[in-house]
Length: 192
Length: 192
DNA sequence: CTTGACAAACTAACAGTATTAGTTTATACT
DNA sequence: AGTATAAACTAATACTGTTAGTTTGTCAAG
Image (cartoon, rainbow over all chains, first blue to last red; front, top):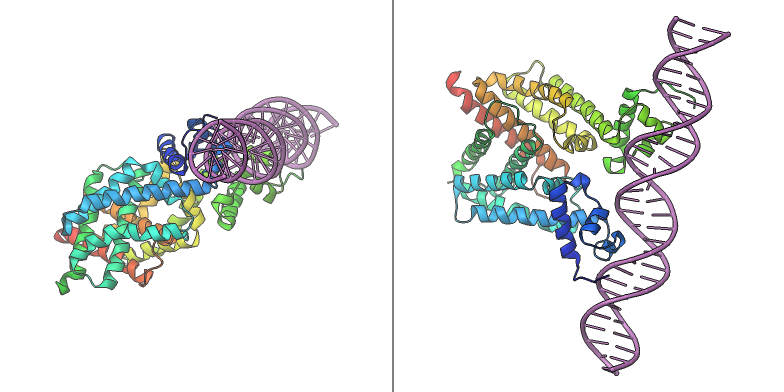
């Protein structure tokens, strides 16, 4: 009624906040609408559907993650950059686990926008790998390896599959990244 | 009406099949009931809720996965066992990706039954690690590393975050596991 | 200043969701 | 043969996302 200056960006932003607060499982169009002081149906003036909305929220979250990764590695090289990258990923998942769930629940990345964003996602990873003297082919392979380690570790840590063991998770993380660092040196060593 | 011999096990089993066929996003109590030729409300004679049902389906899926892992590594040692374990994990996720989504979507593993099953999950991993001469502490750390690599790789491969690169995913996988194998040898080497 | 266009809110309705309470019914055991 | 019990049922509730059609507010052109 009051016709506030509401648009798609603000709706997506509010959705992200609500998901982060209450968890994705308790999120609904109705709750989002109430938070914005409009009726549920009015949301459809700004987003096409719940599915699309979650896609937008996910894209926004990925952008944030990539931004933090890039900030973390700037000015760094070699193992220092590698650790900084992995740590940024880990802390993002820790601090925004519900948003991370949204990203992970995407069915398939056949979306053109996401496909474009895939380049963004990989960019900081390739930047870190560039200091290890890999062939282009090996860069593609190791980019997969590194991303698998980062996301696998972050996911398990977040879902508590790790907790009840009598060893520090920080140390497990250090060992995991060190393992990748050693592998990278071995793979690129003969060209440096 | 016909009062078939329906019980919790059969319901969970049918739910798993339906999820695998149609995908978790298209699953509902109504569809499951129709498949079983009963009314939706009758399902609640066998399971407490949708959430619980998915928990049971997930537990069943984890059991299957662990069984395949154990079968894959039996009679093998060292790197051969390591590769066999990781491959079993990878192929399970590839062949049952919708069930894998159910497992991954568990909020937190504070469930006592899941906590118990956590031992099962880790058992084949520890068995593989036992050949590398690690201290007990290091075994706990490397169990986390290995599981992170396996699930991280499988997840990314399944969600297509890997596909559009001009290098083979099999080779990326080989490199990832080789990296862990080298790391394990380095970590356990001084005690063997 | 009025008119018109347009976006953004609304109401009303629909089909689908999980779930509960209360009731019938078939089977198995005393 | 009678009864207890588990498993089906019907009916109802409160929510879910979504669409169509309608009112309303704002901004720009005549």
